[in-house]
Every structure is written in C-alpha cells, then in structure tokens.
Amino acid sequence: AQSVAQPEDQVNVAEGNPLTVKCTYSVSGNPYLFWYVQYPNRGLQFLLKYITGDNLVKGSYGFEAEFNKSQTSFHLKKPSALVSDSALYFCAVRDLSSNTGKLIFGQGTTLQVKP
Amino acid sequence: GAVVSQHPSWVICKSGTSVKIECRSLDFQATTMFWYRQFPKQSLMLMATSNEGSKATYEQGVEKDKFLINHASLTLSTLTVTSAHPEDSSFYICSASLQGARDTQYFGPGTRLTVL
Figure 1 (cartoon, rainbow over the protein chains, first blue to last red):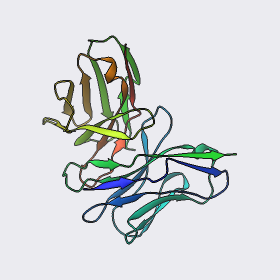
Figure 2: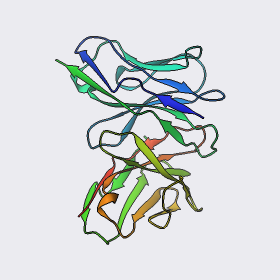
Figure 3: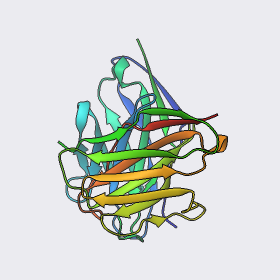
C-alpha cells in the first residue's frame, strides 16, 4: 500500500535558524511528491513538487526539498526560518494506483517558529 | 495563476437542512476536482473525485446520497450536504487540477460548516 509519513507532530525552531520538516514515503514505482502549507482556517497552499529530474527542488517562500530515493524521503527545508512560516505542513504523494490524480497526505507537521 | 475559490467561506445551518458549497477554478479549466474533509488538527480526508460531465467517484465510506457532487462545467463543482446533522460539521476543502494524473492540485480556501 502506498503511504506517506511525517514522523513529527510538531517542529520548533528559532527565527533565523534552519528548519527541516521530515517526510518519508512508500510507493511502488516512481513517486510524485508534494509539499503544501496550511495557515489556520485556510486551504492548502502549494509549495513545491518533485516529479522527475534534479533531486533538489526549490519552491515558494524560500522553501526547498530534497528527494532521496535510497532513504525514501522528501524532507522540506529552509535555510533561515521566519515567524511567518509558522503553520501546518503536509507532505503528499500521488496515488499511482489511481488515474485520477488522487493524493495521499501525511498526517501533517505543525511548524512553530519563535522570535 | 491557479486560483481556486470556495463559497461560502463559512455557513451555519439547522439540522435537517441542506447546504451547497461551490468550488470554482478562477483562471484555469479544471478537468478534475476533489473534495476533502478536515477535522481539527487532522489531515485531509478525500471524500470524492469529480470529472467534468461525469459522475463523481466516492471514497469508501462516503455516502453518495448524503454528499451530492456536481461538476457541471470545467470551472465549477458543487458539494451539497443533504439533511445535515451536527456530525457533518467540519472544514470542507476542494481542489482542482488541470489534467489529473500528473498535475498539481490547487486548493480552495475551505468552507467551515457548522450544523446546529
């Protein structure tokens, strides 16, 4: 079965420090991976995706993610965190058993950036 | 680009009434739209996938007669919660994609439904 895991419910970082939000996946085949961010009472905003190509993907708001096939990971990173980055982050993988483009979401990680 | 809107952003209704939520892709044509439900501090639960001009595909455990989905055009999908009950209170989010299989899903801002 295909799945996505975000092992941390919450990540706390001081403003200005680098941040990492972890994601691991399990799929049969080549994964299509996504990161989304959700602010309170809002929908999800697309940050970045990996389909193929360079393992380091750059996205919105200074975020990037590194696809690591051997470790089946797709961790989200940012060199210098901002207080405004505090939000709920979701990793997702395309459900390859479906031809409709369904996404399988991780359980979400709350990022708290403190001044 | 790739903006998705939802209306209303929040709604309060009495138990037994029906509520319609609209999802619109504003600057692109969406062949596929998805409806999700999210409980507080939890992940998104896919309810159904709809393709323009065809019947929606519901996920296991989702009552199709309870949650009516209509994808009448390439820019509009609607979710109607029929005979709503308090347990239907939730945050409903739609998303849209251009070509489904490989394309990115773009999400609406969500609709907070409260059933009294």
